[in-house]
Amino acid sequence: MWYGLFDAQRRAARALAGESRNASPIEGPQQTLWNFHEDGASAFSQWLLRTSCAYDHAPPFAIRSVCRHGRQLEVVETSVETLPVGTLRKFTCRRGAAEPAESWPVMLCAPLAGHHAVMLRETVETLLEERDVFITDWADARDVPPEAGPLSLDDYVLALEHFICTAARAGDPLHIMAVCQATVPVVAAAALLLASSQASPLASVSLLGGPIDTRVQPTLIDRFARSHPLDWFRRNVIDVVPAPYRGAGRRVYPGFVQQAAIVAAHPERQLRLESAYWSNWFTGNMPDAMRALRSLNEYAAVLDMAECYFLDIIRVVFHEYLLPRQMWSVAGRRVATQALRHTPLCTIEGDSDDIAGPGQTHCAHALCRPIPLRSDAQLTVSQCDHYDLFTGSRWRDLVHPELCQFWHRAQRDALATACMTEYARQANDGRHA
Image 1: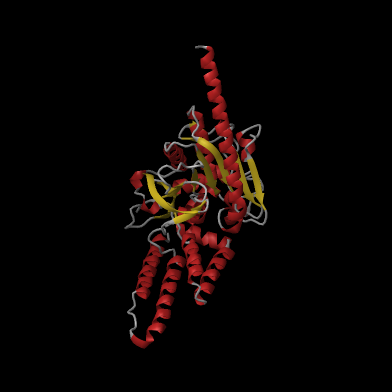
Image 2: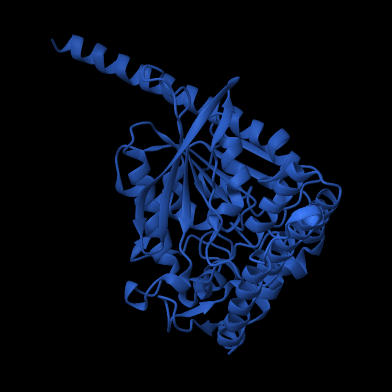
């Protein structure tokens, strides 16, 4: 439909942005005027790139250091494993050789909902203040060759299960944290993993603002998705990746369509970020301007989703509610959520979230266990929209501290249980000696 035309516009925008940055500098007494012009050209080129979704690649995480327990520590980013659907990355604070990690790591499962995982950069940075972090960095479907397969929802659930096992091989039990859309495949992956293994690698599961059951307090997005058949989405929002991308020929839900939908649904967020950038730029407050620019670029880093995955999400989450109805199977394996009955669970919602309605995430407790565990947690954050759950002051001052307390309880209880189990084993061995 429109992908080829839009891609030509993106290439033109990249070329124009490059020309504005590469203009010849002015020498002599007019240098000061040139400096303003040069900064303005750079600002214009950045604006052009982000508003036209014209970035070739997502910006890097580029987290150099964080302050942990009063010490500034260097952060090392590594790619742990790469599959066709994406890469598992790890962020580690460089400690002394004899200094053990005090807190078990967290695996942050990024949503595959139109943005690159770098949109969670602030989330990762905050989490690193307490513990090392794994994150799922999903691939842009336009860059995945068709021979890699259809990239269905099943593929992503199985990839999550595999990534959890890979991360757990580092030794410590793993806290799983899922944001927004990722909550659904994470519950499925965790349930499949626990049903097939005797020893659980999971220390806990945390779900933030996710559509576990969209029948509960449906939002405008839920009602829209429910009221349109799959064929409507196939006809109206699916397009074909053009050459020369590696995924040429693959049918996708384009990132530029999702970006337009997000900006239309939340124009105040885009305006707030743009206002922060330009007001600081004009007043010469470049550090704050650069921070706002980083947020803008991360927000503009969109990706294409494979048609199969996108339609699977519509069907499983919004049309048939397969997870809460306990009728979901992944690659022939039934998703039995009761497998998580012994795993500590934390759910967090925002009372002003217009993407995941009230109760849609909290319902996971009843879905996973008949009786709550002592370490379970449930929080509804006041005056908190969807994005506040993982960025900004609500995230830093309310959500993250709650998660840290939950993880501490889960770790404490797990260690206590392990000690009691070992004591019982030794006592039993002594009786049979």
